[in-house]
Image (cartoon, rainbow, N blue to C red):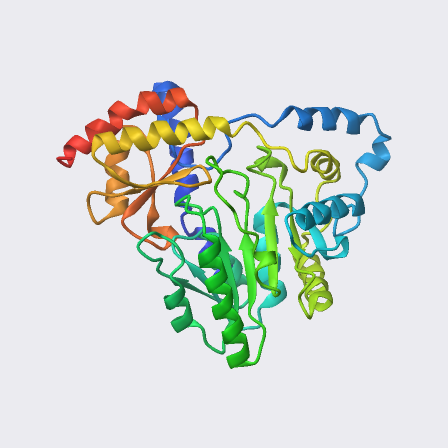
Length: 392
């Protein structure tokens, strides 16, 4: 006998990677310029120059020290730099409350294992990153996904109705994958007020976990409110994958709010959960690199132009799209109820679009515009032909 959940997760399709693999095969068959792969959120702009410079400088160090194990929670110099950066944003975080992780996914998985007792619930809002359910179930918990409001913002009234004695944590994601929607400061404040009232009613802590890998990917001066400034019982989960175009290096961090009453115990639980999963000692070299590039970003102006090209082009074709405030995804409303059927029809035009069913909100496809502007321009005629099939 093998664990049922492990078998289920290992055998279930990951539609994003399935489409990406299909795209790679099609490119080999008909050439890359004829395939319009909008499936995966892989940054298309190079890392900023400071990354290369930091790598070269690091390689001048003694190689034994450079590649040695770091402390399990990460280099103290990096943890201090992260805490200082968050404090500049108005948060209360000390270096001792920062844990360096192997990307945001490891951070989220560790958070769920640290916080959840068997049978407890985690609430999130659709559309959401599909792995949230895996992380919660692997920790013995249950993910409850609530529908958003008409603007794809968290529906706080739905949250108020869903909170119950089994609720242990909330996961929010802003800018959102897959919609690009940013949670407004007003909405976040209202959400936190509801959580505080629920804590008082149920007599236990409800933690707010903020998943923020797209925090820097905003293009018009939009405000990304920091949940650590709004709610004491909060944990921030971050990744440098998107801001520095380093997804393959797997580097991020967890930060526990200094205003949390049980912060020492929560951080110890994070350390213990990471230990139990083997998620310790994030890569030594890349820790040193991101420390020197902490506030830098890749050239996100490319994504801003891509957003304009794609949104205007798709609207001109007759499609109904959610305007993305941030991240590098656009949510397109399907002209038929079945998103998977629409995605399959798009493949006939070599358009690879991710159906939204696994994101918990059927009826849309996710279009990742972290691609070259030239590919978007080449793809628009194919989108137009697809629209014509639906009489748009």
